Length: 476
Image 1 (cartoon, rainbow, N blue to C red):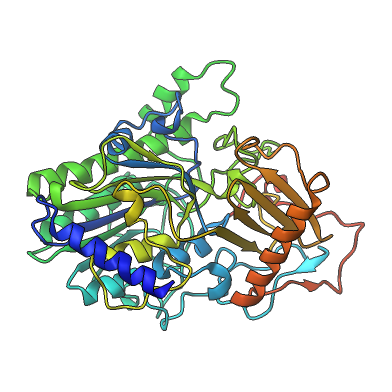
Image 2: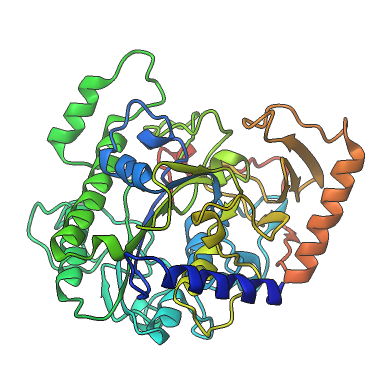
């Protein structure tokens, strides 16, 4: 594995040096991360209600990944995996932070000694890139620790809006209060204010290459958007659009606007052709059809949503434009994961930092390849999610995916090529395959030291697990 990665790094460096537009200089790097954005929410993924022209343009000029995954069905673990290239199970950050035990009478309780912040000992993307001479900026959501563990303590030269919180109290100032701490004017919309900070960083960047991590708070609840834009999408709603939300669509349009403004700034500064841009989400869309609260989105044809290890909870959009390298309008069906940004950026800048084994560089795909040196993807979520997900682990190998539920040790097996909506489990029909995948999943969990749940001494089967949205309010 190590020798192969070293070969790929050498090959990638040689190819980059020969790229006329980069002229031997590694590209600037921008990583956009949306919050709770579903796989099927962008126009370039087939959505006909939402309007995302700038993101669709990004896809048209670069590569769209059809089978990209978040490392977790909730935010903080995925964000930790992006920052470090390490799986959440290995980091012991397996739930949104601080991740309290919400269900006192459930059958199982979360593992002990889980981390409540990203450890300073873990090398972050920003720290790796600083060693390669990059100016680094974080704008927006952090949610990986508070004082002492903020972006500025994790390798970022500049931090605007990043703190321990996972969502703003409101998207309008001054109602957002101290979440986030950001100078603003009354009536300012948070996404617009963060975009100003990102553009300001680009103006001040100097001559060195830069890394901008722009992590949107949108489209996380509370669902709030500028009134005129929400009215526009409300007027578009038809009776059959039961799974569409005009406010959510307006929030997504604001995200799209921000991407457009950043790309426009790059062109104005004359650096667009030597800047790699990636866009993804931290987990699937919030899809709680039984909720009394307004639904955010639908992940159809995928099953379920945020908080679940079904495809709707972990499959996410991923777009990458690398001028002079990615073929315009290209599409990859190779399964990839949020851990892979670390190895990808590391190979591009030819880092001397050790690449974690959980991270695989995507540069072979970006250069037109059709495979990666990896056979499986794994997930581990030992929690009851606020959206109804049950504690589980999963493995994907080729076209098949096995989900193991911890409460009753039940396994479900799906052929994602034939059944992407995970409707029919093949666990009983194909027991030999289910057994092999379960053995592989158990071996991986032991290898990474995946934290295990414990039996709850206060378990009471007469008390159902009450989800936050059943109390009229979605949470986290």
